[in-house]
Length: 401
Ligand code: ATP
Ligand code: MG
Image 1 (cartoon, helix red, strand yellow):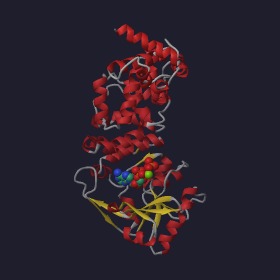
Image 2 (cartoon, rainbow, N blue to C red):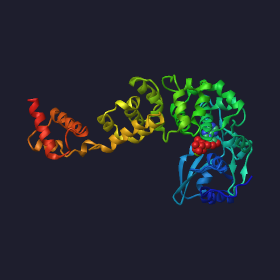
Image 3 (cartoon, rainbow, N blue to C red):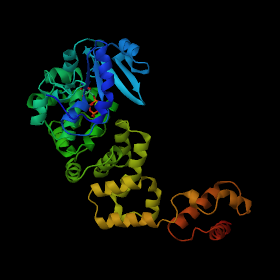
């Protein structure tokens, strides 16, 4: 099988492959970029596998970076683009269900393709577009199935993450998981609890953003995979799945905010969930800001909206995903548009000015007055006008005495 019209990304990288070949090595495009090209999808980055050992790659190219040399990966810089060249390798003895204890470099493409997770990910493509398909990946692609390379039980025992990957590819591609692979997934799902949360999270986030996320989540539920994922148990996935049937999240922060908006978790439990999933502080902040509003959008006040302004896009998206009424979404959009200020720094008065004009001295009262002013301006009680704000501050201070 030969691809005649190669995407530009491959054409740009062709000289790298031919240079390796001219030096007597084998070199192929491998992994996701080959799969996605065959599926007619756009590709992001191309990965190259070669029989050349890392030191050999480095001696052939002038500009290289050791991005993962212990695993056999060297990055070659070519006209501003970085290409990862990974030496053919085999992985041995997984004692902890996650990472190989060590990798061994080999000269055989077949050995390298054998250690790859699924047949659709085990295709290799020569520089001229000729595709090598040693494990019937093309046939599986046609059938729309995800099948482990070799014995699924063995492959999932080696690395439990592959189970999450099977589910995420099914979400991204809308593929079914082949029967033996599926059976192994059911049997070995408990091993998911043993792998690093960060790795599980990356795959789960890709799953959530897949165009067929709902289908994949249903599989995960049916096969009890959810029981082995981090965080307090979510009882009711059905509303989440229903939402995703209609639409999909555009980024993982929205995806998490959506999920947590659909649970009945209280504040503490929601925080625990995010902590257990080892989410970034940014995601946590966004989710914590959005969820209370999504739980009760009709009750949200102008000031509530003002306080989460930094997350307005995510908020509107989660409201839409959770099926909020158009009027509710419009009301919130309208509030956002009409806000007189977007942040405290927009106020036409500052703490320094209040001190200089003798109205206040540095201290807690000053902080309280500034908060009062901010609130009054946001909700429209006073105009954001210097004199008006100064008068407001004076009156407030007088009232306190
Ligand atoms: P994406 O388009 O999302 O990057 P990908 O298939 O390229 O998808 P990567 O995680 O970038 O996925 O991995 C590149 C390739 O490495 C895969 O296509 C697969 O051949 C192999 N691979 C990655 N992770 C594993 C794993 N845990 N076990 C076996 N092979 C793997
Ligand atoms: Mg990739």
